[in-house]
Length: 57
Length: 151
Image (cartoon, rainbow over all chains, first blue to last red; front, side, top):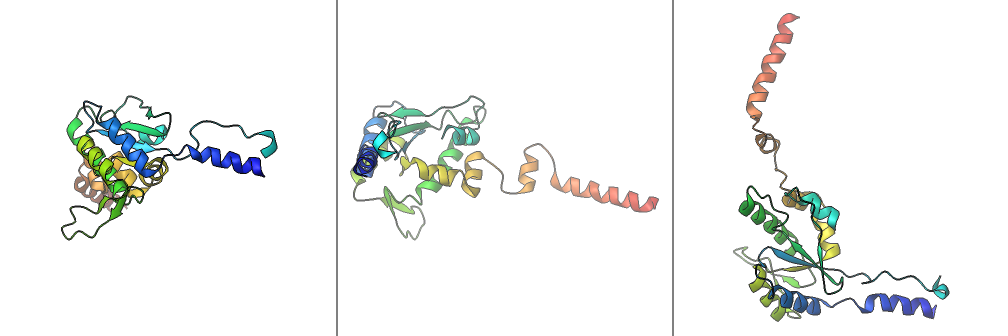
């Protein structure tokens, strides 16, 4: 149970808040020579493929 | 995401999104999705369709009741400084969206048609291929008359 909860928390701990994502995108867009056609999409799931531990199965 | 983007693409070259910041953010270059023959118009249509999704975005924007309907949403106070910088760079009031929201909105109904450049009427659709809708109706009338006269 605790391991399952820890896994869930670890999966979403890396998700950026809207403010963090906006700052990241603004910083990145300012480095591009032609950013007028560029748009960003934030992923909100786990950032890396994770295998559940044996205790959480 | 790649499937949807290639479905709305007006370019024959297969497109793949680029990762920014270790898979936390994806970058979509609509210039690569635009029709190379009518590039400017095609790009403008795609970016206009993007704004349809931005208008209902709840994560970075708050809706406003603008009498002139020039703006339907403004940057939320929790991220306004970054969004202003992003708007200066990209020219869009909503340069960033949630991926799942984009998938849900851009993959459905009228927004998908706006992205894919699907005409709104049958006559507009046929006109793309140089077919005159009214002329077909006239010809069908002649055919029907001929069948009746034989009987």
